[in-house]
Amino acid sequence: MMHYILDACALLIIFNGEPGAQKVLDLLDQAETGIIRLSMSIVQLTEIFYDRIYVAGIDEAKNIVESILAGPITIIDTISHSVMYDAGRFKTSYSMSLGDTFAAATAKNLDATLVTKDDEMKEAEKAGEFSILWLK
Image (tube, rainbow, N blue to C red; front, side, top):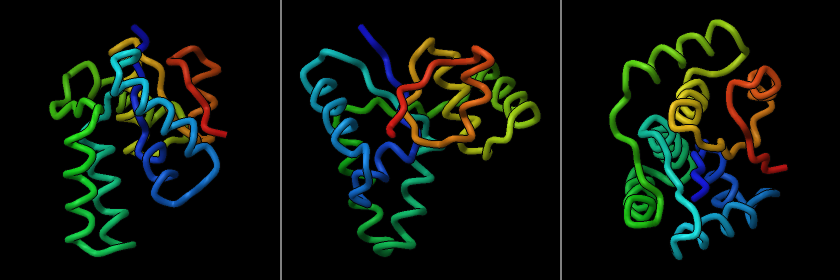
C-alpha cells in the first residue's frame, strides 16, 4: 500500500483554495477507503494550527485541528532519533525550513512519498533523499 506523508502546505492549499487542492482531496478520499495510507508529523499539524490562528482565530484553528484528527490522516506524535538526525542533516545540507525538514525526514524514515508544493524540497529530492508527489 502506498504511504504518503503530508506537508502542512498540502492541507493549507485546501483551506486557501489554491491549485493542487483537488489532488489532496483525492488522496484523502483514497485514504478514507483504505487504498492508501496518509500520515503527518505533529510538527506539520502545529504549522497548520498556527497558520489558522492567524487567519481565523484560535477557536476556528482548534476546530480545524479536531477535524483533521477525526479524519483519515495518521498523526505521528513522536519524533524518533533517526527522524531528528535526518531533520538536522537536512537543515544544514539543504535550504529548508525547520518544519519542512521534519516532514522530509519523516517521509525518508517511513519510506513514504512526501506530498508538498514547496520548491525548497527539490534539491533533496534530486539527491535521492526521498520522493515527492508535487502539488503543482
